[in-house]
Length: 197
Image 1 (spheres, rainbow, N blue to C red):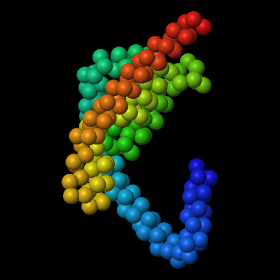
Image 2 (cartoon, rainbow, N blue to C red):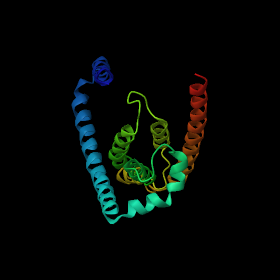
Image 3 (spheres, helix red, strand yellow):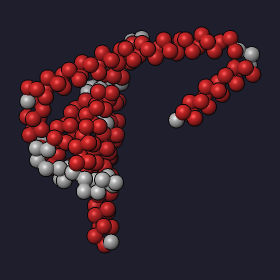
Image 4 (cartoon, helix red, strand yellow):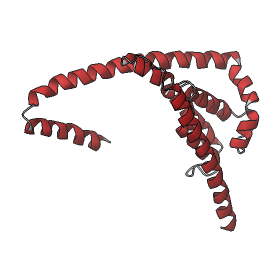
């Protein structure tokens, strides 16, 4: 990755030199860094809000109750995870954050879920079915309220920052259903291949 960024930076400087616009590099760099800092600060507020809500939900027992409600669905999606295992709570928080569009806030829960799933892994060097299923669903990312996108569009001056909600919801529902279906097919094929050796 460092090589890629180095290529882009040096390539940009080289092209600017060819066009005789070396003096425009510094203002462009300053404008980009200022924009990046503004975006980072605005995202910090969103992430902090969601992490606080998650902490309150965890302390109040809301997560445990939600885990019990969706237990049948999780039992079908993750049959290898024992009932009441901490991994289920982490997966629930990760998916909830993704559904609300807080992708950055979902990352810590995703890492913790993978850590808990690894404790159930009998072959630490190979991903389990539950890990693959979680990764597939996480990547497809069904989004009910794309809060981060709305915040970014609003900060960029969009007149109607929420107009993309319907399109994003439809796209992510399709991608999530496709991910679940493909994961199920791959799981069956992998089991047959393991059975026949």
